[in-house]
Image (tube, rainbow, N blue to C red; front, side):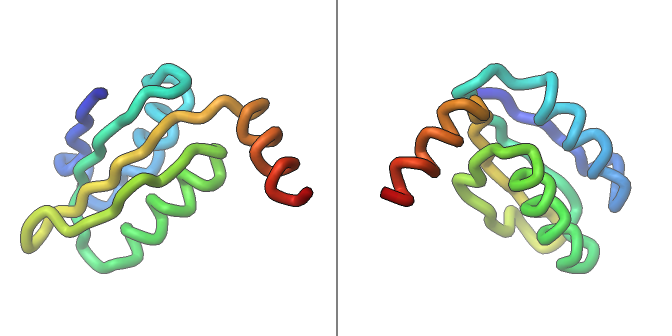
Length: 89
């Protein structure tokens, strides 16, 4: 499990979040990401980014008045496709 503090990036954290999701976590590893909420659009952006990368959003919660935390598990695309196939049967 790794923790990444993206609060210093303010609303411009999406590029760094995507970079970490692609290269900063091993398959099966969990990452904790902190970022500033600003408006709640940032929360949706982060969830969309996780989904786009094929990873699993385990939790999303308000950390304090200005910060948000998401917990993400890095997925293997092959196992994700297998789960989808099993669910459709």
